[in-house]
Length: 279
Image 1 (spheres, rainbow, N blue to C red):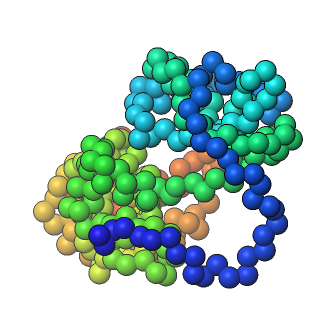
Image 2 (image 1 turned 120 degrees about the vertical axis):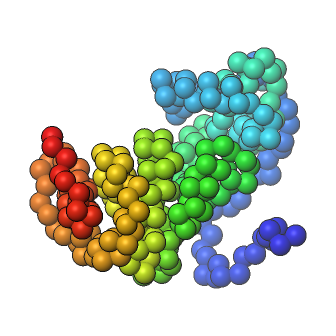
Image 3 (image 1 turned 180 degrees about the horizontal axis):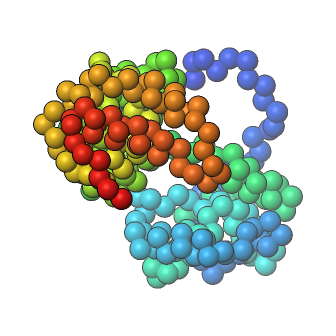
């Protein structure tokens, strides 16, 4: 299959290995009753942690359950290095035992492994998460993809501004947020106002710009739905307006995108010959 990629280590020359791999771990199912948290390095269950446990329990499936990393300690018990939230969620679901990767290390290396796992994990980027959610049929992701397709927008991953193509954006988190805040019609119109004018405004499908357009169209749907809106925006110099927004001093705590929103609204009302809305 074309979508299946082999493990390829070309391009990794010059690596210096600073550690030994250590004893080969064993994988086995262990009862939750023999698992323990060592409070010398494990974090206590915070409110956020409890919420995470609830989410895992509510949507528990073995296909989403990574093996718990544990180390044997005195009394036939095992200290959890990674996976305490998954273990709590499993217990909530009435599960008695979980798959574990058992590593033979002392307390110092347990703590070091805990630190390494929790501080140096490679975070999954928003664009990659969106792609995975679309593939999984997630309703929210499919909604966003439909909006983007209608507007001629594509969600890019890890690109410099100079490499962006027409309609490409890195602002996936903002798009999700604005869809919930303003709805499909307003968000679609905002994206179209950027992508379908002035030769595509390449590199301008940015969080602040999308937000500014959404706010303008939400404040007065006439601006959003006017039949001549895209035609007049063809003459609007969005990159220059963006630069002016960036250069405009704003008070601490003020939303910078409002500077651009004001300029966009003023321009649209003037060119469409619409009256200013009274406050």
